[in-house]
Every structure is written in structure tokens, then in C-alpha cells.
Amino acid sequence: MSKEVHTETLLKKFKMESCKTVTTPLVTGEKYQKEDGSQKVDGSMYRSLIGSLLYLTATRPDIMFATSLLSRFMQSPSQVHYRVAKIILRYLRGTKDFGIWYKSTNDAKLVGYTDSDWAGSVDDMKSTSGYTFSLGSGIFSWASKKQATVAQSSAEAEYIAAAATSNQAIWLRRILEDIGEKQEEPTTIYCDNKSAIAITKNPVQHSRTKHIDIKYHSLREATTR
Image (cartoon, rainbow, N blue to C red; front, side, top):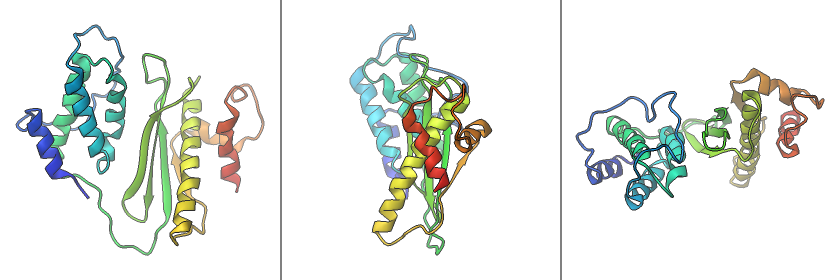
């Protein structure tokens, strides 16, 4: 599944069909904020670009985080925000044939992956959660969303992200059961933060976790079912 034709149309619309390509949709290490001191740009043009990019995320999860990040500035976009959006277009030009490949398989096993940054939002110091799920071959469910609360550590940010991923896994398992693809085994969710994993295994409320909202601790119950 790919949207190569739509990508080419989008590049032509913003006169980027001959632009130089880049290898990543964002510049590593850069952070962006609502008021960055640069001149404001046409909001309608910016919103049109972000809307088109959001449409592309239906088959391009690799631009999900970058597009979700830039969508936070649609109310009052600046030249910096527009420049970053054009970086995504430059990335798309070099990868316009990318998509998701699904193949026939008898191993329809649901697998999840979770990750988070820490205090990535300069405006409110909130972190961003992200997850993807695959079923046998290609991924079919993904999201990137800013967390509702400020995490006091990277472990807490990863824990909150894992809780959101767990909730999505439970919902997906119910959907799969309804369509005759019941998951007989527990769903594996991969997390790259050892401290967050340790929190899920520790039922004792202590100084590092007692302030975390109770709703996120549903993750502990989910891991013991």
C-alpha cells in the first residue's frame, strides 16, 4: 500500500518536485515552539500542507511523529515551522515509493512497539508517546500523541506511553476476536526503557512512582493477565 501519486501531486502543489532529498523527516535534536521569534506565514497554506501530510500518514507511519509535531502549530505557524514542513516534503521526494507491504501469512500474531521522548514539547515540557502494531507482516495500527501530563523522568514518560500502547493492544485484541482472528497468546509489546519495564513489574508504590496517575497503572494489571 502506497500513495505515490498523491505524494507527487503534493510535491508539485508546493513546487518541491525538484527539491534536494534528505534521509530523515526531521533534523535530529532540534526542538520547536509556538513563539520562536520568526515571521509568521500564511496559515491557510500551512494548514493545507499539514492536512495533506496527515492524509499521507495513512500509509506512511514514518512521517507520523514529524507531522503530528507540526500540527501543533497550525493556529499561528511561523517561517521555522514551514521550513520544517518542507523538510518532510524533501524526505518524501526521496521516498515517494515507500509504503506498507502486507503478505499472506498463517502467523497472524499481534505484536506492539512503544516509545516516547522526554519533555520534547518546549512550550509545556510534555512528552510524546508513540506506538505501532503489526499483525503477521506489515504494521496496521500506529499513533503519535502528546501526553496529557508532564513526566518527571524519561522512565515515567516511557511508562505512560506503554500504558497507552497496552490499552490499544486490548482494544485491538477485541476487534480481532470479533472478526475471527482471536489471539490465543499474550500480546508482546516491546519497550526500550529498562526502568519503565521495572515499574510494570513492581506492584509497590514508592517515591519514584507514587505520583503517577492511577489510570496508567492499568498497565501492571495488563502485564499479569
